[in-house]
Image (cartoon, rainbow, N blue to C red; front, side):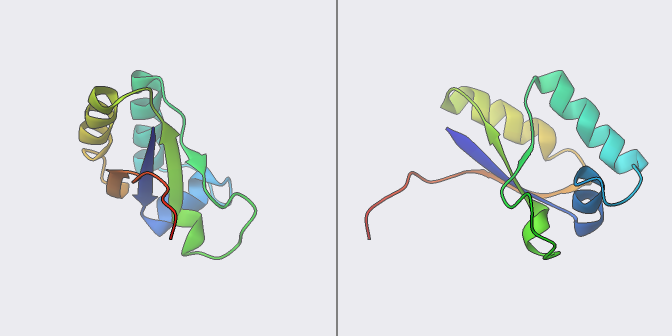
Amino acid sequence: MQITVQLQADIARRLHHQAPPTTESEELNRITKELDVVLVPIHPMTTDPELTRYFTVDVPDQPTAERVIARIQQSKAVEAAYVKPPDAMP
């Protein structure tokens, strides 16, 4: 199961190591370590500022997803977090 996370553009740049860390980016790093999850860029090689904002987090089940979403949404760095809907045929 995957969670999609949209970050503030400034924080995303910092997580892509394109700018020095800030209090908010450090706080988000602490939260993810506390939850034992990893934010993985959806578009790791892009320079498009809109696409760099999106990350995923893999979780084993719905209760864990709900707990992770509730906690990371407390960060000012996070604009949105939601469970990715299952892939479906068009």
